[in-house]
Figure 1 (cartoon, rainbow, N blue to C red):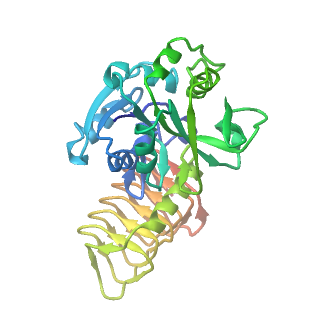
Figure 2: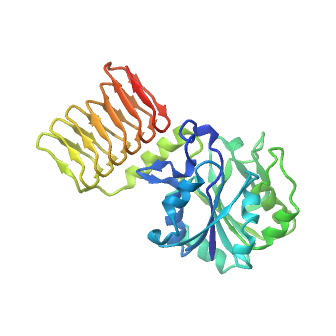
Figure 3: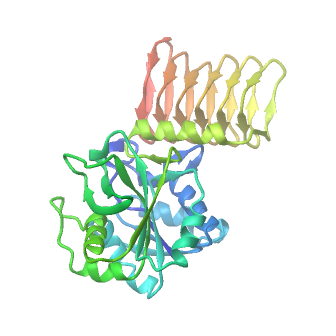
Length: 353
């Protein structure tokens, strides 16, 4: 079985984080969110993968994943020139997929549950599609499945009055039948070819669609708050390690992951769950955590950071109390006051007071 990973879109709700690259490369626990998708596909024996690229930062995707060998997969890149919807992106892969069943993964989905059982079941079944559902608090933001007598009767994209709170999450198991439906699909009010519309037509044509409902193992990452929550959830499940150096007089509590050549200096305090990337220095007087990711090659001095993501190559020399923040790569913060602040900073931002 082959796989399709969608890596396009503009990520407008995440600006300024996405001004310089695709949202799927934003790190969660120091790893691009789309890498979790590739790991999930590989774990399901889906190793021949087409990545759909388009828009800002496509070159960064190719640079990071290459041919896929270092991730244990084979990657083909297919370009989507315009953001015309998920169904349009899938249709671009018809020659790649040929006549076999396939797996589609949206690159901004985080699922902390193995899907290998669902993949195997679908591969060996007569179903024309299998979708995964999850209960959500805000169903109008998602494609929603209407379930009656344990069967899907309709699939609706972002309904104003949702019939259920069961969101169709961004993982689809499909048969080649979907291509003919997409060929005759009309654009939605957003001028996109919606996957929910294609699935609903597949359903109304008396094809067989299976579904599974998962619980709290899936996270949408459409907003900064979603990303911070996903970061916390992944950190909570990680196994502690220490490849760095913690000076005598530093304090490490809870689940902490410390990378290579990291230096935690005397007087610094780390409260897990926290991950600290390679070659980072945490100076005396710094208080990091909980629920915080620090990227590679950063320098933190006399700062207080919790429930936040700090990407690589950052310098924070500040008495500020930073919380619930996402700070992009190459950012610099130097402030002398001790206020509590929330930051959403794009790449290369410099703040000095």
